[in-house]
Image (spheres, each protein chain N blue to C red):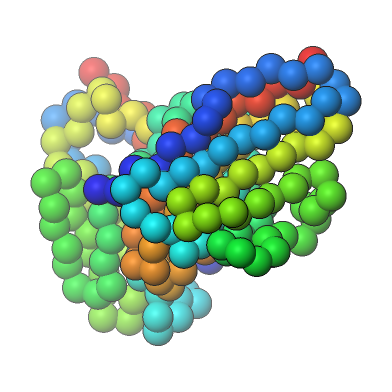
Length: 114
Length: 109
């Protein structure tokens, strides 16, 4: 199966700083990538849909200026959490689609804001 | 926004067959049904996918009735390592998933 890699897998940052999370499709070109966040013992919540070369589409209630998404190529999408606060601490997961019915998920990034 | 409904949790014992049913009453013509498994602090892992009737692979079977308003994931002879959360999802080829609560399967020795 296709591989999606996220980096870093864990990050700790200070309150007020920004942190960037990368999502790469290693062996295929992803027409669309998605970003999710997951709180402990909760389900995944879709944050935004990212298409290469165009602006991301954010779900209702997700602050686009807070969570900056850049989809620079067909194999890379980045999520930047700006001016992070402790309430942004969460597990962030990306998935990539190549236009088939199966989506491929990354291993997730654990963000802790202190 | 979740398109699916599943039991919140299920218990089973090692060696048993486990069937998890999912309701998706408003499934669209273009939607596929996909099941994922998630362990703590990991991304979801693909289990099986189908459109209609029955699909079987090396780890599971998926039963879909003719009206496609529900589906059943069947895990044969579960082991302790199958303890995880199982998500039933419906989406078209663009894979925009809205996750429901999932089913937490607890396999006991």
